[in-house]
Structure formats: structure tokens, C-alpha cells
Image (cartoon, rainbow, N blue to C red; front, top):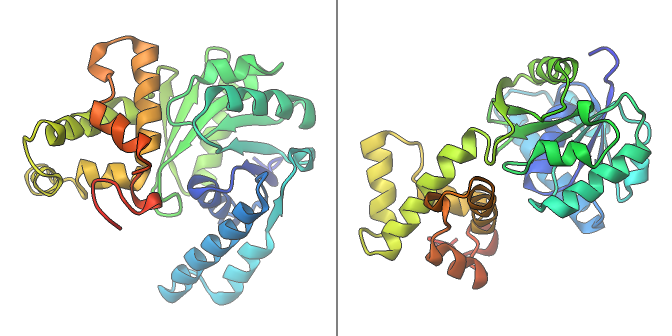
Amino acid sequence: MTEIKKVGVIGAGTMGNGIAQVFAQSGFAVKLVDAVPAALDRARGTIEKSLNRFVEKAKLTAPERDAVLARLEASSSLDDLAGVDYVVEAIAENADVKRDVFARLDTITKPHVILSSNTSSISITALGAATKRPEKVLGMHFMNPVPLMTLVELIRGQATSSESMAIATALCAKLGKTPVEAADYPGFISNRILMPMINEAIYAVMEGVGTPEAIDTVMKLGMNHPMGPLTLADFIGLDVCLAILNVLHDGIGDPKYRPCPLLRRMVAAGHLGRKSGKGFYTY
């Protein structure tokens, strides 16, 4: 752990900026990389707002906030990760794009550096196979919102070494997170259980079993869930839910994972949830 001082985070979206913030808050120098400069600007603004809320709640002092921001550095080039000690990839859920990124990281970063992915469903074994260091490739699946959620799902690929998993486990402790190890099956633990529930809730809407409000209320008041499955789907992004269900359906081959036609239709219409302003609810 003493060797990990500088961390590279790839992708400045919702998950990427949260991961970058958590590492910076834990004392690491962070290089946040995104090919789109505007995304980096938005990420910086989002992180500042998040840290300001911590200051308002007296969980951080103003000087501590400023020190966290000083440890964050933005870049639009993967080549700038040549000097980092650990990498977390947090780009879109696209297996081909992720494999390309891992193949490039393999040539850019130092040979001993662990390359991890925040993927919520894609095979870690396949990502490792795109590199010459599969023993140093693992899954590090954070939960949204990253600064508040304590769980990190650690995924061991077919070739991932025990040493790499031990380093990632120790790193989670340094971040104040609780690691749980999952095997490299589609969806791992969290989404293998969560996405079929969300999918079934969408089927219930499509078949007229209940309104989104009714379904969410039943799950909140009857099952004590903090938010209903359709509210959660809107929060995650319906396009992300569809991508994960496709991975489950294709990877496991069981028809019970078939994405609901209503979900496909909503994504095709651009109704993606909170980020588009409309999903099962209007925002």
C-alpha cells in the first residue's frame, strides 16, 4: 500500500468523478482522464459541490476540502497515466471499448501496476486477456453515489492473482470502503440480483399490474427498500440497466434475464431516467 501514491481514474462521468473524489479524499494524488474536456470540467464542478456539502455538514474543514481539490489533476490523454501506481477504469459499459482501453493501458503503465475496472457486469477475464498482465487485472465495482456508499464489489478474473486481490482489498480499507469478493460471472453479485428485480418491475408496468408509483411504494413500504426499483432504475440510467441485462442474457443464456420490451422501447426513445429528464418519472 505504501507504493500506491498516485491513482489514475479513466472516465469523468458520474462514477468516475465519485471514484476520483474518494481517492483524493483518502490522500491519493489522482489523475482523472476523459477524452472530452467538457466532461472533465463538469466532473470538477460536481466534485467541488460534493466536497462543499461535506464542509457544510462539518465532515470536512475548508482547508481539507482545498487540499482534496489540489490532489486532483485532469487530463484528456491516457498517455498521462504513465506514472500512476494503480488504475480504475470507469467508462461506459461497452466490452469492446473497455478491452481497447486495457490493451492501451498495458503499454502505457508500469508493468507492476494493477489495472482495475469499475464495470458492473462485463467479464474481468476478457479484460485481462487484452493485456500481458492478466494476473494484475481485477474488477473494482463501486456503488453510486461513490462518496456515500461503502460497498465495493471486488471481482477476481480467471487469471487474477491473490496478491492483486489482497492489494485491492487493502486499498478499499484505505478508502473507508467494505470490499466483498465476487466471482467473474455476468453481473457478479449485485447486478445479478438487482437487475432481474428491476426488469420484473418494468414487466409489471408494461402488463398493467400497477403504476410505477404503486410498484415503488409496495417495495418501499412492504419490503423496506430505501427506494423503489423504478426510481432506482431511473437513477442508474435505463440505458445502463439495458446494457447490464443484455450482458446477463447473453452471458448466462437463461430467458429469465431477457430485457423487458418496454425497457428497450424507452431506451430507443431516449427516455433514460434522471440524466435525460424523463424515465418512469419526469425530472
